[in-house]
Image (cartoon, rainbow, N blue to C red):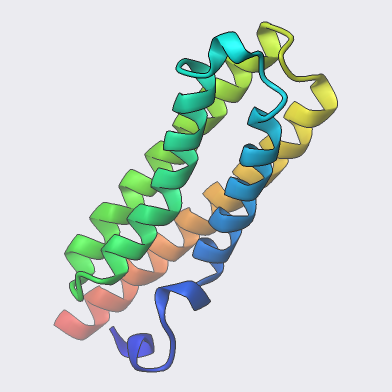
Length: 129
């Protein structure tokens, strides 16, 4: 990929946003009841960590096909994070303001991941034509 010579995965906007979101989730799970330590809390941190980890792993594959596959997995993990936030809201572990703030960030990152995937696929088509 052309940009790899110039930057690492840490410089990708989608990766930076995933790290910021992960930090927000870690701050949030500290508020969850201890009874959820191995439930929602564990699932939330695993899901959000999967987002950044898959971006990084896909970047390291040096193949458009592999990279986009890992970006799709990252997007799925992002939706999994939203699922557990939704459950947390319904159980009243978090309030509406906390949910809305994280939902907004998740939607933003989701859009950016979609755009990034589209750009990679488009760039790959150009290089194979």
